Image (cartoon, rainbow, N blue to C red; front, side, top):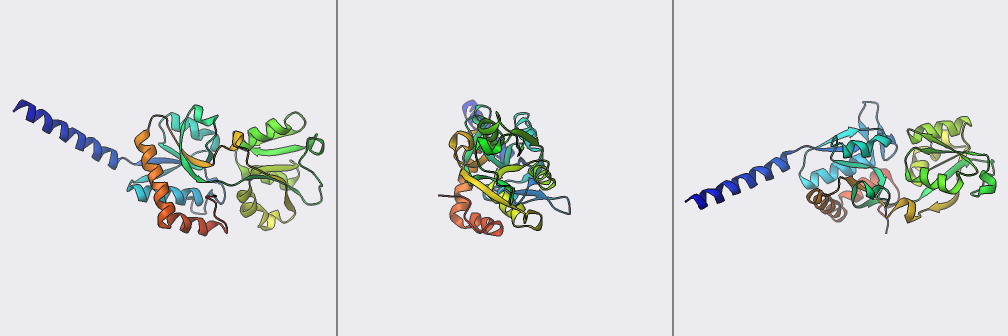
Length: 257
């Protein structure tokens, strides 16, 4: 009888834990300053590709999610400090970041590019960039890449957001800006403010800096959450939801090959 009672109690506790996990609101860190992946609209809401992917993943997992807007360089500390449960903010799954946090499978992959003012004739070389100022968003993969490539000859100017870097490019306070190609194309070059600027140099895809793609950041040793997120990413790729979100923002498939 006692054995049966213990079994029933254990089953009840397991069920309670399962319901507790299912009912817990998943707090997702987003940035809000990286259009079209994330930006704050006129109503003060964070919107964009990252946000829509987060909502699609949450719906697939049947989990209630809350978007938490955090500055880029505060995302990993917030995750480590348990203020959020996951990061969906165009974060590359690099070896360096994997020393402190874990990542899911990728949910997109696009190259990094540089932009310059038309007619400036700046080239992608140490000789051409010597003495020039390169604008980057602080603590990003392209911050580290530009620093390693040109930090000994150029000034690397770091910004809280990519928008701030582009504002300084327009005003002439920096000579070039490095960022993800689609962010620069759709959020800047295709708009009136970017009409006097252009891409230059190669597509930057070095796995040493950019990992195997953009993925969802989570804390280490959270295998159940990682599996659930990976299953959700796979499901939305297969059921057409990913394509629906992709086509809302882009003319190409950003998931890649």
